[in-house]
Image 1 (cartoon, rainbow, N blue to C red):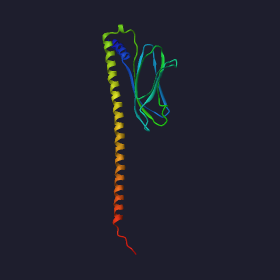
Image 2: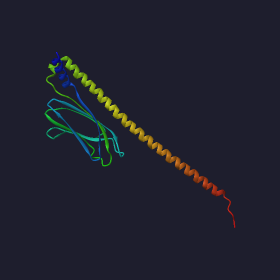
Image 3: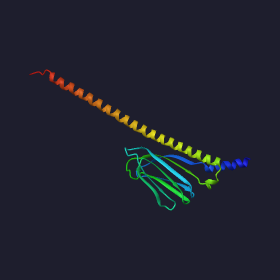
Image 4: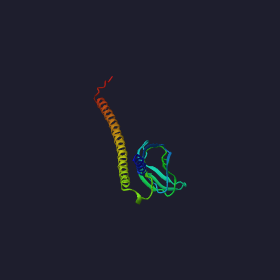
Amino acid sequence: MILRSLSFSALVLAFLTLCSAHRIEIDPGGKECFFETLQPQDRMTVTYEVGGSTGGGHLDIDFFVTEPSGDTIYTSFKEPQGTFSLAADRSGKYTYCFSNEMSSYSRKVLSFNVHGVLYVGDDEHIAPVEQEIRDLSSGLQLVKDEQAYLVVRERVHRNTAESTNSRVKWWAIVQTIILFSLCAWNVHYLKSWFEVKRVL
């Protein structure tokens, strides 16, 4: 009975969706590449979003994917966010890269998730319980992806609000300084009109 439970648990782990979430910073003119080793019919999905930029740059990034032979199978230029999915047709390392080479002064803060499903046999021979586990795992992954997306959006909106607040504060300070300077100049100018000058 214990052996059967262990083998079932191992099978369940094989069916569960593999997922990893990352947050990286890419320097101006830089590029970051990662890879996943897949077997035929394995599935992989990469979702990403630019969550911040230093130096006033745009919230965008270049993204491309290459297959084991080195051929580029997907490219996306200057997008703030994106999703790419593939079903592997050959075994090997599938490489995906995020490039900030088009920017010469702004560093990009990027959040991305990688998740996939390992192929195990024919779906017709999967037990109902195992199929339910697959469905639950897929649903859980969708919830996690949505939560990660909301976290990134909240960070972007918070950074925008803080930047706007800072600009409004400094503009108000500058206006106050200008106002007091004009008042002081007006008082001085008007006083000069009413000064009694001695005639020697």
